[in-house]
Length: 251
Image (cartoon, rainbow, N blue to C red; front, side, top):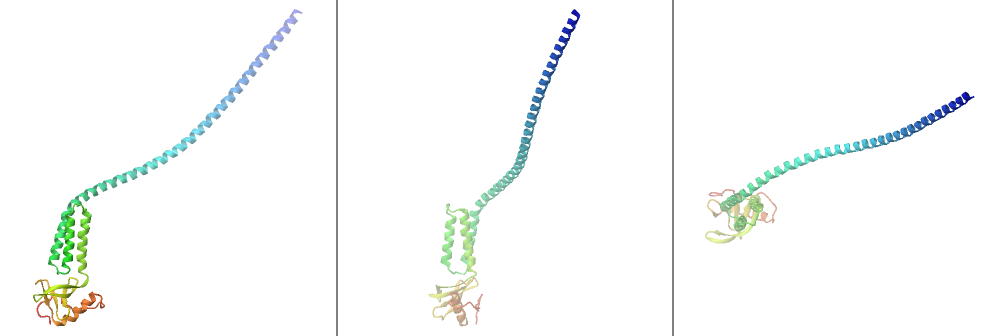
């Protein structure tokens, strides 16, 4: 009877131990499931963060490439600006040198033009001398810039050049046979300058070598008269038969 009771107790203990072990196993299984779930969540979170970092890296990489290209372009532009600055520096040095050379050059040009006018046919002589006086005053005026001085001297040269291409007629008092006479003057560029008295009785030309007015034969009276009318725009332009260089008898 005692033996049977022992067997029952042993069976009960075995059943109790087995139940405890099963509960422990189940508890471990639940812990493992929770741990697995947490691990998966952590993996998912890490993967999401990694994807985010990769995307950010790609964006930053594109920005870096763009900045590299931008910087390369800027370096080219900066170098071009530096080269241009060097060129301007060289030009500035040349400008300074030219500014120093302009006054003596302008002075020589003016002296040459004054000499030319003094040796040229004496037409509009007072007007031409006044122009040269104004240019000379400009060259001696420190308030007048070098560029303005050059402009004025070149303008004077241009005006003198224009005289050689124009037909001109005007009144002037000349010395003829020792007397002052008001005559009509005909200037044909710089080829010749002719006169005719108001009554058309006397016609002549200016002799540059002699520096005086000399008479022409009567055969030139009509030609000079018509030339004067053409210069005054009172007659249409036409061919004129006039002596360019006259010496001796022009009959």
